[in-house]
Amino acid sequence: HRQTIRTSTHNYDVTVGKGLLSEFVNYLPKHYQQVFIITDTIVQPLYAEALRKSLETKETKVAISVVPAGERSKNIDQYYQLLTDAIQHNLDRSSLIVALGGGMVGDLAGFVASTYMRGIDYVQVPTTILAHDSSVGGKVAINHPEGKNLIGHFYPPRAVVYDVETLDTLPDHEKRSGYAEVVKHGLISCDSFFRDVLTVDLTTSLHHELIVSHLQNGIQVKANIVEQDERESNIRKFLNFGHTLGHAIESELGYGQITHGEAVAIGMLFAIRVSEQENQVTLPYDELYQWLETNHYPLTLPDMDVNTLIQRMKKDKKSSNAVVQMVLLEEVGRPVTKNISDDQLSTYLM
Ligand code: NAD
Ligand code: ZN
Image (cartoon, rainbow, N blue to C red; front, side):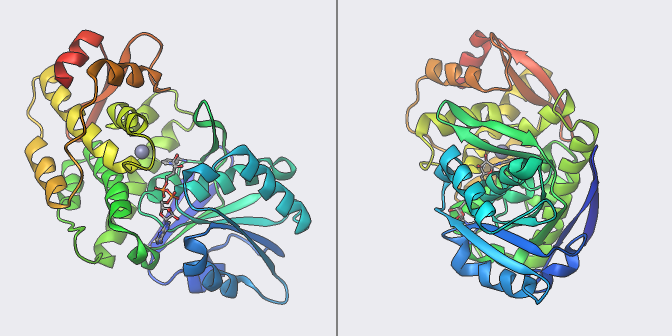
């Protein structure tokens, strides 16, 4: 279950499977004498010891820092504290940072790695479904009070080691959040993958083989795009399918009220409707709606003012100042970008 991802600086392997934490060292590109694990307060008691055990030997020292779980830890103070920890643990240019957790830890630890001593190696150990998206592609960042991910880098990891057994402990809303991004990868790549994703039932315990194949396919879709457009000058924008309205809903409701993926799910339904109108095509709106409903995605929103939403959509950093640019579908697997006027948007949003 291994895929290789090419970047402009180096290639790295992504391994997805069961029980990988206990044999973690086998997936490292080389031997490291000093390893610094960064994780959060929810993941640490679940998986940090297993990872430490598999790393610690006479030749390898392991240190661990734990940050509070939640998006708020992606801030400059936490970042600075982790740099201080790294210095105190005597990390040098040949040490390794391991990001053990979801996208929050991945972005934060990756950003620490990208700047500590002008950049040291790091490895992603994703423990959320959403992190199939965030752990690949090399974007690392922290937030600024003025906006998410405003301080960051393109800095790919040296490996991604994805143990799907860690996903069993995810709460339902985090499963929904992550699977929305898998659905997105299906919609922008190919109909058969999309249909296959809709066979999953998130209301029962996760089926490991099915999830391994979905995560690998999702990672492949993302990898194909970022390999062609590492720095988001053109097609990487397609990964924002569903995100224009999704981000607006997320920030309007306030983070913590709805997960990222749940907001994106609503955004994808909207983007499909707009696509059908703009491109005069029929898309699997009903199938997606049905699947989302069956899996308890929140689909009815508290009343939100249409103009406020449009203003929020404009603040989305992917849109140029005046008009909202949306990712639409010509058919499943054929995304395009299109500018949509405010008037059109408000008709679609009514
Ligand atoms: P997260 O890391 O905050 O994880 C969500 C919650 O699940 C947290 O409370 C966490 O403690 C908990 N958790 C993690 N693993 C668990 C497990 N195995 N069992 C039980 N609980 C677990 O968030 P996320 O949804 O994984 O990722 C969102 C973050 O990813 C955001 O900061 C977003 O900006 C970032 N992101 C980055 C990229 C990128 O390309 N770099 C792409 C998408 C998202
Ligand atoms: Zn997203």
